[in-house]
Length: 71
Image 1 (cartoon, rainbow, N blue to C red):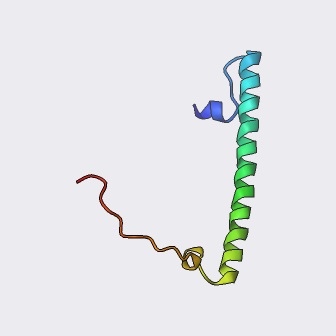
Image 2 (image 1 turned 30 degrees about the horizontal axis):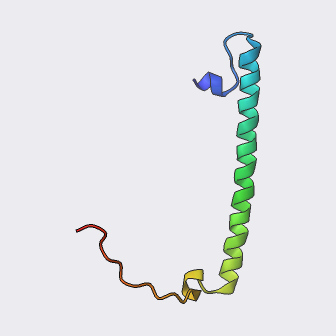
Image 3 (image 1 turned 45 degrees about the horizontal axis):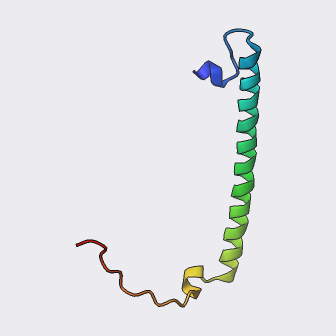
C-alpha cells in the first residue's frame, strides 16, 4: 500500500497509471484547498481578536432553560 501511495504501480496498465495521476492531482488540490482555508481562518481569527469581544457576547437573545425531550 505504501508503494502505491508513492506512485509505484505493478505493471504498465494505462488505466492504473491514469487513476494514479488523477488521485495524485486530487491530493494536491485538497492540500491547496487546506492551505487556503487555514489562511482564511487565521485572517478571520485575527480580525475577531482585533474587535476584542466575542460574537457570543454580542448576541442578545434570551434563551430559556432547556427542557428534557424525553423523560
